[in-house]
Length: 450
Image (cartoon, rainbow, N blue to C red; front, side):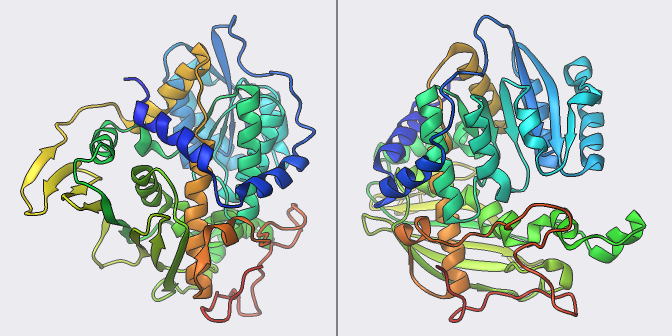
């Protein structure tokens, strides 16, 4: 299956439009990337084997590596990097079981620590970036600097500064003709492609409103006490937060960014642009333990697009509630269930079209499309819409944390910097617990952003 034309059109449209003031923001970030080398260090067309480096060896990184090694043609995992050796060892064991010699990584090509990514990137033609997303802008910039093709997981940043870094590196990747994929796999899912093409062709008229949901029971939590018992020692605060990364903004961006981005991205794709502003509410009602860090367990955000239409968004990590992971669009002539079953109906409720099924697993398809672009030198850069949809989720978090209206321009140009000043096991993360082990929780009406 070819990469759908609708997606390619969307990419260039978002790239061209950008944000209201993103040109100046990107220019500022580009200064920091000015030393990026022009040489092309990625896949040599005369070689049949694409060498892959995996940076971030958790579950999603291991999954992405599995899919990369399952693409057509000769592919080999040659290097790995992670902050923790046990994560790397577990990942490699699984990959070797599935792929044998394709995942025969030499001991000297396994790198541990905060700077490990640079060494792994240097050995590859294509790099998989799948660490906690707070590191994504740094790792992506380094990969582009070294002239490598990239697959990076979503979200691509956790704050406006990170989005600016990614947009600047994306522009550099475009100049260098590097191929960039982003793990928003719905763009490679046949049902989504077909229903969105029909919506954009006018099947339900002009879009009036949209709804997007990721409401569920939540994800894993790694409690400090239990982990320390298993490890047989105390963890530094940095190590604990890295192990329990989902619950800290500097690492995760909150679940509206790390998870709900999928649904927000779908509506941006439908609209062919991104929201201009948003306001919302959220808080912590159930997930309030000391190992739930500093993030909210629910967000509800009202996004306004430049044409005046709205998207109503919900994401929730609370068990025994109404659950939905889906996207819906209302038009002047009808409505669409964009997610499965991927169907259209008139305003009278009668179904007018329904996806008949088919297509490859989208997680595999996104890698097949990326590797095809690398092997055949096709234009391919998903970093722009990945950055725009990431900012949509970031501005939603800023709105729920602060209780204020937030514009896309304010979010993009925010001086908020969530990253630690120093990266090291003894260094202090941005948020520290009090004497009872609890973290400061954002309070709407009091929390402010620079």
